[in-house]
Length: 194
Image (cartoon, rainbow, N blue to C red):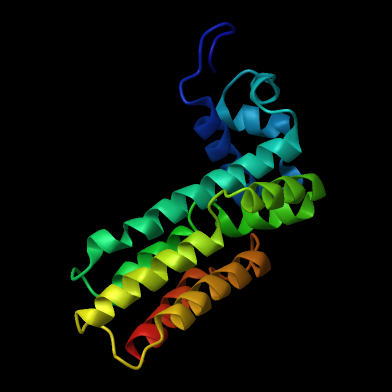
């Protein structure tokens, strides 16, 4: 536990990671500011010193994870011609499920204040599924020009299918349900390789 008055390095990430562990282990009903700070091993008031409340905290957590996945999707272009196309796309698709993705997404939807903050941020230009979809489309178009993807493949439709399926799996998965990753892997392989 950090002593009172001693700065906690990278406090946002420390709190976000703790929240993900709490939700993964105990479910969304267990997420409280006290549960997060206890899990993080920090002072009880730390969360409220950085966030106006749990709705803002949950919204910021979701937006942070979207931003990370969008950055990973945008870096797909660096992988052009490497590995297999399915492996590269799978890494991006599965990144949506890392760090408690399904549980955290469900949590955001269960908190109307957080859902509203997320929607407003996305409308204001924060990266979300649309950025991921555009990055996947662009990547597939380049791989298609290199002959690593069939000419008959429609990059924008495949990107929509990957992002739409990931969104569906995120919204319908919660602690105790089957892991959505194998389904996502099979879908990516079928869409890209036929």
